[in-house]
Amino acid sequence: MHPTIIIPAFRRPYSLLRLLQSLEAAKYPDKDVHLIISLDGGADVEVVNIAKSFRFSHGDVEVIVRERNIGLREHILWCGDQSNKYGSVIILEDDLIVDPYFYHYAVSSLSFYEHDEIIAGLALYSPKFNEYVNLPFEPMYNGSSTYLMQVACSCGQAWTAMQWSLFKSWYETSTEKDIDSCLALPDAVKKWPKSSWKKYFDAYLVLHSKFFVYPYQNYTSNCSDVGGKHIVQGSNLFQVPLGSEFRQADNFHYFTTNESMVHYDAFMEPCGQYVSNLLGLSLSDFEIDFYASKPIDLLRSKKYCVTTRETKIVLKKFPIRFKPIEKNLFFECESPNGLYAALTNAVGIKQSRYNFNYYLMAEYYSYFNILSNRFVYNFIIAVMKKTKKLIKKYLLFY
Image 1 (cartoon, helix red, strand yellow):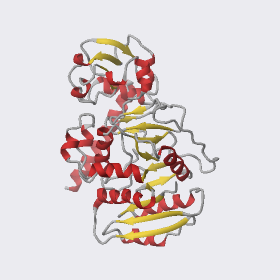
Image 2 (image 1 turned 180 degrees about the horizontal axis):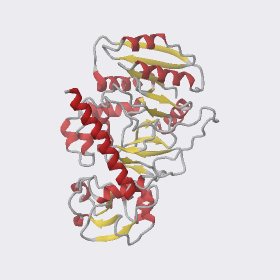
Image 3 (image 1 turned 60 degrees about the vertical axis):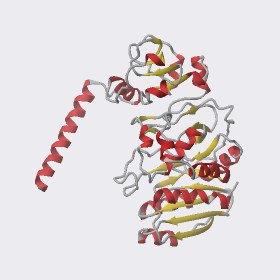
Image 4 (image 1 turned 180 degrees about the vertical axis):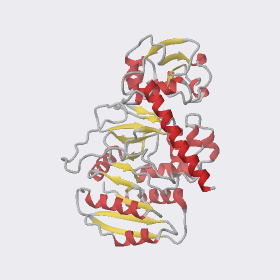
């Protein structure tokens, strides 16, 4: 396995330069790595100059400058299509940085999962944030280098030609109706703009019961710089910790999809054999709804659910104390607030995130006491001061 690296770029010169510098500083198994810098039509002049002047000591560089602007979605699709030419590809958007051993990880993982029909792609990034509910995400460690999730990665991803071809065949015949009618896909994903390629890949994963491979160790980090297509103002929300560049080479260990017990669904909720064993139920009998974000109809498609929603008939109660969150299913208790195992026909109305259980979850994930009186008081004062400054600035402007 010898994946080609492709960087789609457009109008962020500093971001592109930073990524290229991290690629040059990375470690590779040989000196024959092919790097493509693909610039969309109308790319910033400085971006073009940086791309054309870059010298890659680990291989050759090909720079593509388009005359026509094809947009982010078509650009990523084009990048994926190059897997048919090169056998496999690593896609790095320009606001990423890479870990020194990112290429070693990609080669190792692509080789291991190459013939696994359940796997539809490989992530180089391990998310720490569940953007569907605005809360942190912490995966259960399973003893290997990777876990599985029904969420495509846009923060550094890789595909073999076969993995990409199967998705592309579905994509060319799919419709918006296929996505909108997919009950097991978060509403937030359905509302993403058509410029999002990930919207379609997420639907493909759910509809075909496939997964993306995610590493426990991060091999990319997302800087979400100002000027992006979907996060225009920039954000630090998707930054994740990277390892030391002075460490020894990582050792990778994998389980097959049948051996791995840690899986997550499109809502980033546990759906693997680990929770099945803890509950003593078949995977087809229950739905996990820790974040109270799943549609009621999806919950009622199963006999049981574990949720933070208020329920009419509670079969079992679990705390929200242990981490990661599925570990709480090991400790049955009588806590008045926590996780409830219930018959799905007894689940109450859908809760908004503005309820006590949401803030209970926020405190659970926090490393300081956000529900303390002192924190709440100081937070309100800080918001009021900031609001006062904004109002004053607004009045002076006008």
